[in-house]
Image 1 (cartoon, rainbow, N blue to C red):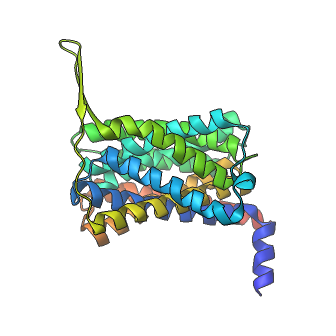
Image 2: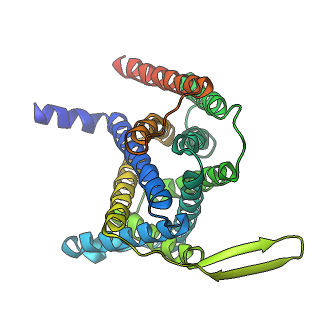
Length: 313
């Protein structure tokens, strides 16, 4: 039975890719919630959290390569693309971490739900993947759902950073697609986290302020809080959640088309809602948000049913 299941997944890479992208969505949701706890309860700035969890990933990846071999797993000829991926990754992470710290976690996650649809369109435009009715239903359903979930709400600065994260992650996904063709997953994790840590240091150690009225730019050293054992554990949890999210993400792209596995990232929305309620006590009570959830879920179910029907032919 075990062998038959294994052979089934090997012969159905799209199914394996979908399961991995679902795993990615869960751990991404967990990362959002942990960051919310660190920034609001532990009073660590979102920029500091971004740097610390990226540095933790660098250390964990190096430790894993000690037994497996540095040369085999970390050799690369694409440092530029790793640096580019690290830049887009940290811009997206820092932007979303700030959005999560000032907004309802599910509101921030709702905006990031546009990413799978952008990925589907990217797959069609840049990778010559087929345009299908299910993909269009998923794309339109996701957009309508996100609009409904943010309907009749005050626009805060956090929304701007959430959309900035969306743009950065969409560009990041394009680079990831190129790297997955030749690069080992550990090399991607290591170099991405390494370059991201370098890019994150200025905003983590300094507090910037800009006054456009007199063209003055000022920055001062940022104060760091005293880290408790609880805070250290949460930072490690954020790092592990990010690692599992990225490993699943990379592997999913290796197995299946970007437009097939990408849309399943939308599952982070119900996952985030569930974890936010359990851990933070945040609830979604307005009617528009509930309708938005429903639209996204229905469009996703339609996509899955069509995929299953197509494979059974």
